[in-house]
Length: 132
Image (cartoon, rainbow, N blue to C red; front, side):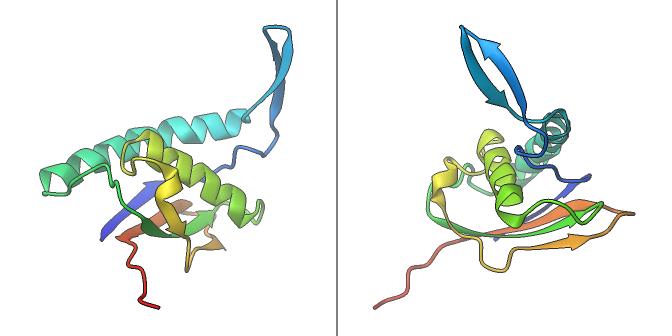
């Protein structure tokens, strides 16, 4: 099992998305708040990844996994699915998980509020298929 904490108020991609014109086409890009969160999360995740590898972990994970995340937000806003999507993208970009398609379960994930100490507490375990 891999346990980690990402400090700071989590932000979703879809919160206040922006429109730009690139190559003559309109494109939707994530909000500035998400981009700031993502940069900070990446710094933290890359450090946590290096520590895990030093401790003997084999990363990136290249097998089906279950992720349990508790999102401690600074305010009661956003929906769980969008927070999960932002976290999955960060786990893939930091090379903790090879591909976020490998996340087969978000069992136990939930939203909470902790304005004084916003963060995401994450547990990642290898997915074990049940015999049918």
